[in-house]
Every structure is written in C-alpha cells, then in structure tokens.
Amino acid sequence: KQEVTQIPAALSVPEGENLVLNCSFTDSAIYNLQWFRQDPGKGLTSLLLIQSSQREQTSGRLNASLDKSSGRSTLYIAASQPGDSATYLCAVSWYGGATNKLIFGTGTLLAVQP
Amino acid sequence: GAVVSQHPSRVICKSGTSVKIECRSLDFQATTMFWYRQFPKQSLMLMATSNEGSKATYEQGVEKDKFLINHASLTLSTLTVTSAHPEDSSFYICSASGDRGMEQYFGPGTRLTVT
Image (cartoon, rainbow over all chains, first blue to last red; front, side, top):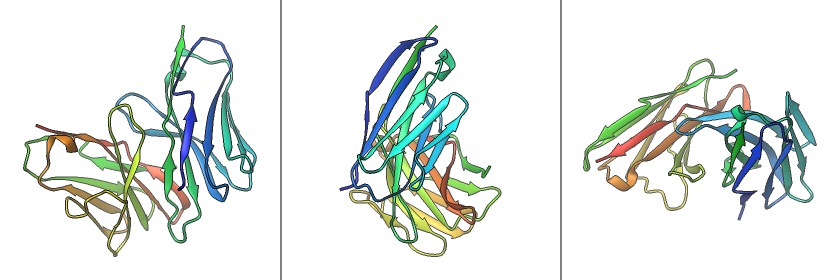
C-alpha cells in the first residue's frame, strides 16, 4: 500500500531558526513529490514540486530534497519567520497510467514564535 | 499559473438535503479532476478521480451513490452530496490537471456544514 508519513506532527521554533520537516513514503517508484502549505481554514498553496528525476528544488528560503532510494524528502526552511506558521503537507504521486493520484501525508503543524 | 475555482466557499445545509459544489479550471482544460475531503486537523483524503466524459473512479470506502460526481466539460466538475448528514460536514477541495501536464492545481476549498 502506498503511504506517506510526516514527522514531526507539530513543531514550535523561535524566529530566525533554520528547520527541517521530514516526509517518508513507501514504494520508491514515484512520479513526483510536492510540498504544500495550508493556513487554517484555507486551501493549499503549492511550495515546491520535485520530479522523480530531480534531487532537489529551491525557492527563496525553501529547499526540498528527494531521495527515492530511501523513500524520503525533506523541506528545509531557512531563517524562519512568524509568517511561516502553517501546516506543511507532503504529497506523493505514483505512476498510475493516465491519471496520477496524489497521496497526502499527515502534515506538520509549524509555529514560529516571534 | 493555472487557476482553479470552487463555489461556494462555504455552505450550510440541513440534514437530509443535497448540496452541489462546483470546481472550475479557469485558464486551462482539465481532462482530470480530483475531489478530496479534509476533516478537522487531518490531512486530505482522495475521494474520487473523474475524467471528462466518463464515470468517476471512487476510492475505497467512498459511497458513489452519496457523493455524485459529474465531469461533463473540460472546465467544470461538480460534487453533489446527497441526503447530507452532520458527519458529512467537512472541507472539500478539488484539483485539476490537464493540458498543462500532470501537475494538479488546487481549488480554494468549500466548507460544508450540515446541521
């Protein structure tokens, strides 16, 4: 069964710290992996998309890495800010013919304290 | 980027009634649309996948007669929750993929409350 797990479930850090969020998945034959941000009561904001052939993607203070062989991805946030407080979701798409379903992880609730 | 809208953003209905949620791709043709459900403090769970012009494929445990999905055009999919009950109260999010590749673009979600 294809599953996605995220640890930790919640994280609280002081402003300015660098932090790492973890995502693990079963079955290394993935199509791509995405990191999303979700604010309370809101929809999803796509942060980074890593194709299966890539090892990392960067956008501003965010860097996501992918290691298919170990079934892991990390999201690195540099110099965290209170505005980064949100739930971060990892989602994995596996090859599925014409349609590639996304399976979401359990999420990490991040609180950045000013 | 690709834009997906949902309507309504919030809806309150009485138990036993039906409610329809629309998902539209505004600037691209969506050959495939996905419907997700998210309960409080939980992650998104895929409910069904629909391809334009064909019947939706439902995930295990999702009642197809209760959650009716129609994908009649390349820009519109609808989810109808029939005979709604309080336990159907949830956040429903759609996504779409199509002529811009396999990436899914997400709508803003619809908060359904059944009283």
